[in-house]
Image 1 (cartoon, rainbow, N blue to C red):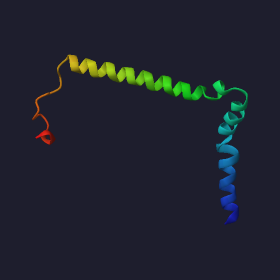
Image 2 (spheres, helix red, strand yellow; image 1 turned 90 degrees about the horizontal axis):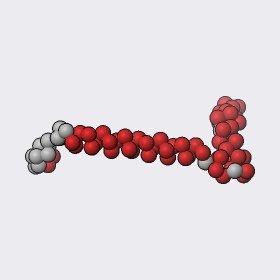
Image 3 (cartoon, one colour; image 1 turned 45 degrees about the vertical axis):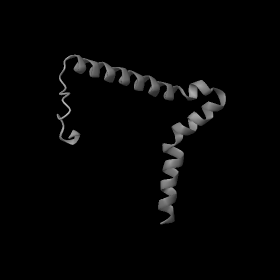
Length: 76
């Protein structure tokens, strides 16, 4: 049973965390290169936010939303 858990630990520590260990070693040399993935995620999130705002403006300009205060049952 102990071998099973040691095998699971080996898979996670030596195989699955290998990219994270590589990033950890890279950070010692270049902070910017180590965080490039984070920068890419921020750029993607910003682009998605801009797209979402554009879509909201499009629906708002078309007056497709029922803005009557009693349009939804939870509003009273």
